[in-house]
Amino acid sequence: MTRKDKSICVQHLTELRKRWLAKNDMFRLDDGWNTLSDQRVQIGGREYREYVWSQKTPDQTLIVFEVVRGAFLGSVHYCLGAELLQDGAFRFLVDKDLWEQGVP
Image 1 (tube, rainbow, N blue to C red):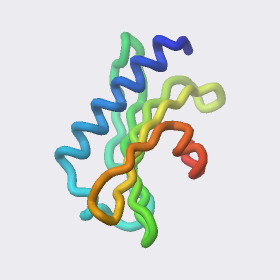
Image 2: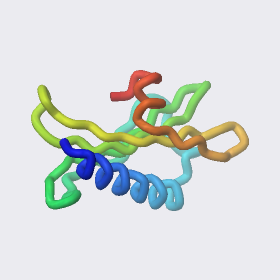
Image 3: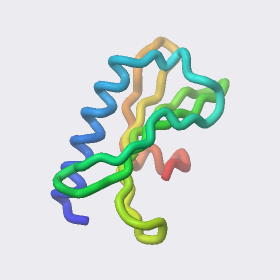
Image 4: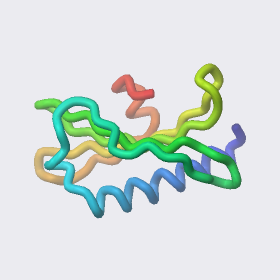
């Protein structure tokens, strides 16, 4: 993957996160792990699998926006997240923040 590929994927995920959060109510998510969207998308002329999933526990509500390209062993993942804070605001997460929480 090139730096340009990463940039294009991060831009795609940023727009996806913005649109999704504007249209959906995170307070209504089910507890546990939930796949909210799973589809094939074209990004920069390449095919990716796009996932939106949530993890809701008593302590945290997290949404992850992820694109994956390639086979299981050698696949490339890019992801961004959003954590719902107690005051209703969002804390936007980048891949490093998610990795620290054990997300891809």
